[in-house]
Image (tube, rainbow, N blue to C red):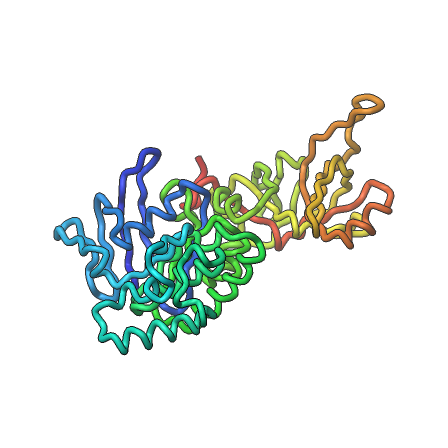
Length: 369
């Protein structure tokens, strides 16, 4: 079972050029900012939009081929899709919504399958209700059941959790993970939420301006994004221009320091990155890539503190009530660690572990410029 996508579609800001293959072994998460081409890719697979050129092949069946003038209608593609906004039929009951794609089945078989999916989605007892009588989480579970009931060969999830509040999102996410574990088809999960895609999808493709800029397992993509844009989309907040000094060191221009590296540098190295939560606070300056640091500002969330740090020298005083708030790095620490840290006199010492450095090129193809 495979889904092969190789399409181009001209959009107002860029040309979508999506080329990838999906197998049923693991859900593929498509991560990217709004307007990066994620949803348009799904819509082309579903047949809601038509590419300008290319091919889409699902399990050997050609869904779209511009050269051969093939473009199957959505109803013949065996593709299920779940949207952010539920898109339930308001005049149909929950059971009728779930059974909407099963009208070709005998009545008894249709009712059995609807009942099975209502049970699987923990919707027992609400089959006679209408969408407006349900919570947002229940409505999204109905939409998921409706998409899966016809047993599609591929399931497309387009920001399915983003319209839910935090509590409902967690509930539906756990339901989704459970459902996908037993789903025998292929899944594409589109989101702009970094943590969400990491929890749900073993495989990730990062998109920017209509192209894939990183693809691989979730650990590969987060630990070795390869390009600056992929690192940024996957949550890296610290970047510096970089120039190789030797085979084992580089000069970080914006951080004003030489860094030891733990792996071979790419030929077109242009930047070095470091994830905020991986910055380590150490007792002295002896470990490699360890520098004195001073706090210039902090920002709190319920569980973490972002600490903005200036390296090598104390911030410049601009008067009795003003401070130089420029910074070199931002670190993220749990509040329990922050409570201990803030009691210590400055300078503190921070380490950028060599094995955690992100060695980056400007472009996804490994080139600069």
